[in-house]
Amino acid sequence: MLAILDYRAGNQTSVRRALDYLGLEAVITADPGVLGKADGVIFPGVGAAGQAMDELTSTGLDDVLKGLVLAGKPLLGICVGCQILLDYSEENDTRALGIIPGECAMFHLALTEEDGMPIRVPHMGWNKVAIKQPCELFAGIAPESEFYFVHGYYPAPAPQFVLGTTFYGMEFCSVHGRKGLWAVQFHPEKSGRPGLKLLSNFAGYCGVTHAQ
Image (tube, rainbow, N blue to C red; front, side):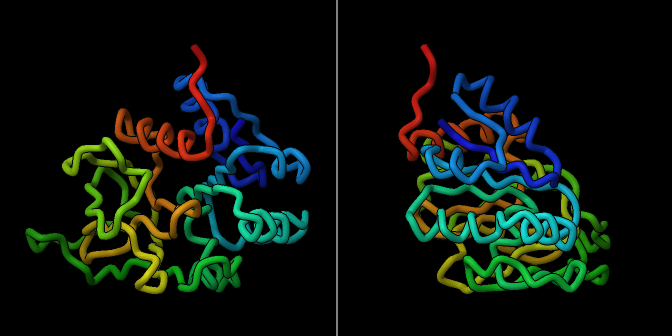
């Protein structure tokens, strides 16, 4: 079973629908006991870093997440859940979880696309991911596949944790982490077949099988 962390940060339901479509057992929960018994945890998020961290700290889920990672529980962070795994976010001047070293920075409006046109912030749309290190999440996903992004800030982890990058006015980290602890800036649950394959790969790593 996969546990989808419920910390009132939005998009838990869309992740659940994607997992249901794949026939994967999942539950939306904030219960530390259920999170601890799950085969893997998905840490989604929509909204602002400050609001998300306030909810995590006020409920004690920040310490729960850190404990799960220390115990080796597989974890997948999505969007805001990707950003606040780092030490700090410029958004709301937020001290984040500090699970992976690095910071989250804002896209500068002075950046331009490859055709010279200024970028729009937030970054909203479909983009490719260039894999920089072997990553189980992308097994069986074609290199030209595109994923759906909606964000005004981007993760900048320590270089050894950069697993994939995307270009939007600049090359930025769009996948970071290490084996068993992954974070993606895009929304796999909204990214069609490539996104579903990524979620399926995560479930497979966790040992969760598809219903027959």
